[in-house]
Amino acid sequence: MTTTTSTAPRRNALGDILIVMGRELRPVASDPFSLVAGLIQPLFFLLLFGPLIATTTAPTQGSPWAWFVPGILVMTSLFGTAGTGSNLQYDLQGGSQERLLVTPLTRSSLFIGRALKEFVPLVAQAVVVILVVIPFGFRPDPGGGLLGLLLLGVLGIGIGSLSYALAIAVREQDWMFWTVHQTVLFPLMILSGMLLPLENGPTWMHVLAQFNPLTHVVNAERDLFAGQIATADVAYGFLAAIITAILGFTLGLRALRASTT
Image (cartoon, rainbow, N blue to C red; front, side, top):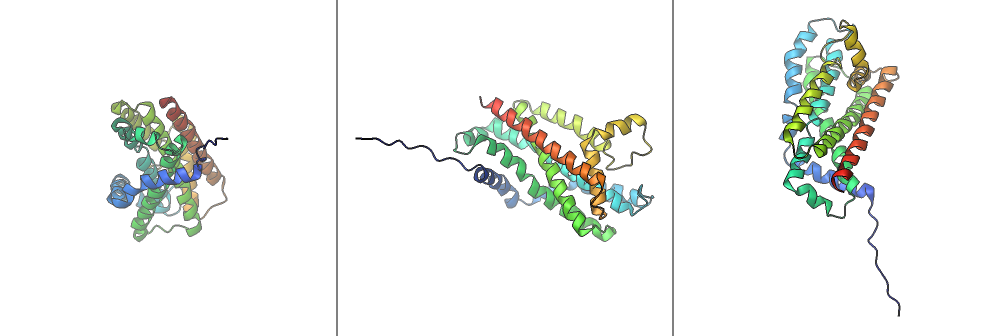
């Protein structure tokens, strides 16, 4: 007489990631206003700061909107994803994340699915910003614009991953998450040149800006939306966004494993 033992079926990593992405996107689909809420601050900068830029000469001697709008799109990526870790922190404190850990889903998919989910709402928000500013004279290059949206999505995934990693690391300390968030966010924004050109800034600011990944992404977005695709700035921008995403995934997965052992 022989006995057979059954083994649990191997999980499909991609399938698990898609399940988690779907779970995270459902609240966005059921409440589209959440996308609008994330646009309030960038739109304020666009509508109140933009006219000041539009009355001056753009650093590239082109359309002031062509210089300013790509920076606002990167700001949308920054503000739209840097705080998303607070949602994970809430799940960790409320116990819903622990309930997910006992499901058959692979643990890495719980993090990767959350991070990849940032791509969809971010691109939707960027499209809204572009549509808002087109009547004011912004004329994006179609092909370069699509690549620009892809670059924004990759950057958003990276920033969102870092935000989730921070949330896991300080899951019991809400104040610590927001302290780090605010301490890092605004220096990165100012040193990227997304609002004001850095050409006339001091030398130390130029040096720091070169180590800021947002600087390279902003420069790449300006080239892409102007139709200049094959430039060094575009290559550096994609490289900076990809490195940010890899760093975010690495730190996030490590923090998740450390928190569940």
